[in-house]
Image (tube, rainbow, N blue to C red; front, side, top):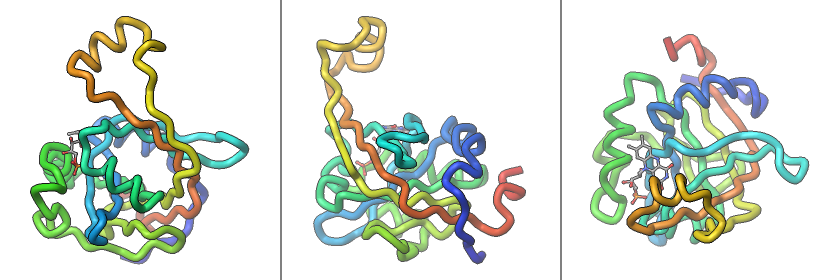
Length: 176
Ligand SMILES: Cc1cc2nc3c(=O)[nH]c(=O)nc-3n(C[C@H](O)[C@H](O)[C@H](O)COP(=O)(O)O)c2cc1C
């Protein structure tokens, strides 16, 4: 399926809706191997006058190491029939599995960043990290830290400037 360039905010609603199932964040490890992890938290908007995808990655994730190496990532919006792929990428680590091989993903060459994208996904955001910051435990409302960080493992927040966005020609009709 040919992908065409689209405006970053064309499908904002569809991205937010799909995030309930999970999006796929792709980066590369130190050996250049692509790795995909599921993300359910993130947002898209304008920061520093630039279109930005903001994602939260816990320190324990292999992806954390990968993004710190590459300095970029892609956000891949899967179709509903890829739910099992998302679950897999959200429960096993790239330290132990080659998730692209396991799930039969095709790695596409991005136009603007080193991290590849997943051809089978319908909508792709190519993002360059322009800022990252670690959440500060002291600054949380108690209901957030108690609920989400009882075991520690805090998040690093990556601000990915959106450089290039492509979608399948029949996206979002295929979302159903
Ligand atoms: C639907 C779903 C959404 C998730 N969202 C996030 C997230 O936003 N941030 C995060 O750090 N982990 C999230 N996870 C957990 C990671 O995807 C999971 O730990 C994954 O195995 C990490 O892979 P890696 O070690 O290859 O980076 C999510 C898992 C699922 C199933």
